[in-house]
Length: 256
Length: 256
Image 1 (cartoon, rainbow over the protein chains, first blue to last red):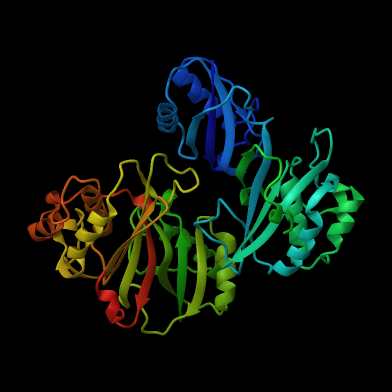
Image 2 (image 1 turned 180 degrees about the vertical axis):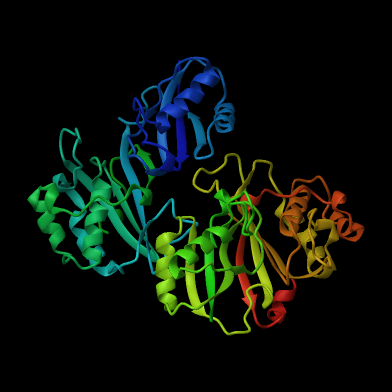
């Protein structure tokens, strides 16, 4: 049996997230069905982690085991010819036997995009969260600093999350503004359920002035989900990158 | 009666083009229905020109007459709150009585995007034409030079086009490549039905090597649609800008 690694891009709008679910369409299920068609065997696909319903990915990673002798390039072409337009395989590689898409992952980068102006965008509507109320990016950046480091993110944990511990490490959190688009990029060791969207929802409250930036520290210390802001909509979120190998990024990346 | 000018953005995927059609959903019809809802009067919306079924716009311009006393900003908010996500009003202005969205237009810019690499894109699939076969951008640029100027574009005229003359002026035609995206931008006095997509279809044939760049001159001179390349798919095309006022752009814009 060989182990094959996939690099995936998808627009999550039509799907109930990455993970297989009995009565809903998931990305995992769609790709597994195409792998079965190609290899003539039921094939289990393991992702680096779940992405929520409606969340997109530029660089999701997954692996599967197969007895097929097809070359990586042939898998790429066969899968892309069978998959719907909103799921694409960007790269196929032979993986080492000890590689595991979920367990070997050491870092992930997520990006959230907010469109902040007087009118929404028709061309970007599937990929951004639109807000008319002006956001103060400076205040959001100030608040974001409290989140960088190894912390207990219990206040940002979505209900139903089954993680053993709520401690995670955020290596870097940057907020950029270009034209009317605000992008929040979070690079961390791993994330709790809804953690990025709950952080973004809280940053938005600070951005429009409901709370001062220092409130972020109070929220973090409270370890109480009800004190934090609401969960930002899934359409603005994408999984950008999954990193395998070294535990933490370059030194300079540790401060925002 | 006042005359109101709209700047519009839309993703054309779900629509049978700009123009009203008896049994198909058009962009014009959707906006007219919302204007009627807001003003309580049947309102005719005049666009700068038709965009074909599936074609997008970043900067379509339209106007309508109304007895309403609503402010431009109120029209913007009311329309955007009623319109579906894939149609957006970017700007609303009071227009002079002699302004006409179609008749006063002196220039238009269209852009066509081709994604050219080994695998398609899930996040861009609605807005680009994907081609796996490598295209020679240098050859395409060479061919494009024959199209700049005041010429008879009969070879690129779609069937059913009712234009009085097939002479049009292309002020500028540029082909840019960034990462794996090739963008073809055409700036002209006006365009025949399917003209941009037929030009792009012909540039693609030259790009993959079916014809040498000089074939473009032969095609242009033949005034025969059957000699040119096929019509490129609508998903890659967007109307970028409509210009009113001065007839031709700055001098330097005349060569590609």
